[in-house]
Length: 197
Image 1 (cartoon, one colour):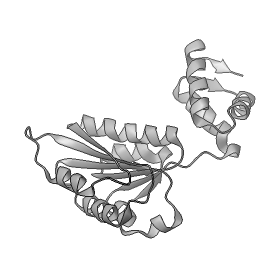
Image 2 (cartoon, rainbow, N blue to C red; image 1 turned 90 degrees about the vertical axis):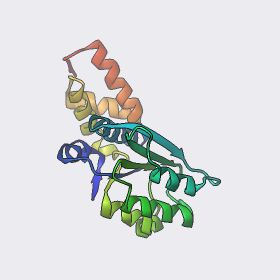
Image 3 (cartoon, rainbow, N blue to C red; image 1 turned 30 degrees about the vertical axis):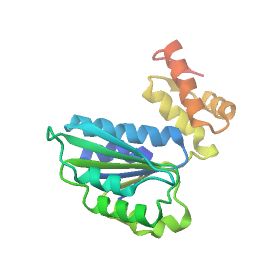
């Protein structure tokens, strides 16, 4: 299944898939989506977490072994893989495809990476995530849609932005969602439940 970051909350309400791939260039949206998946997993008893960060020298057999290892306390766990590049190589692709098709009964597989390149979309590992789990696209918000995004984000913080205020903030942050989010949080502290405009 393929969704965008705005659909993560509703998808999680329907149930927690055992396999998640969150990819994109927008760090704020990628981080929030991963946080939401982790929070839902914790609420369903996934108390353990193993984090793997891949690089050129990463040993993919370590990831496979970890996914098959039994916990001493029979805890359910999140196996999180952070890939700076969506190109895991032949060995990594095979390991990810195998894990996506069978993460194990007590595991939740969460992979976070940057925006996939053109050839990645047709790779076996990528298709395995779409088939067996959820692929979350965390693409940047278009400049034309940024005021609407700002107004929606402000509503979550109990603020009401009029159109001009949202336009002004969008102009000031120049497409930087993290900066916009931080400004909204500051305004929420200063004007709790207020209208900005």
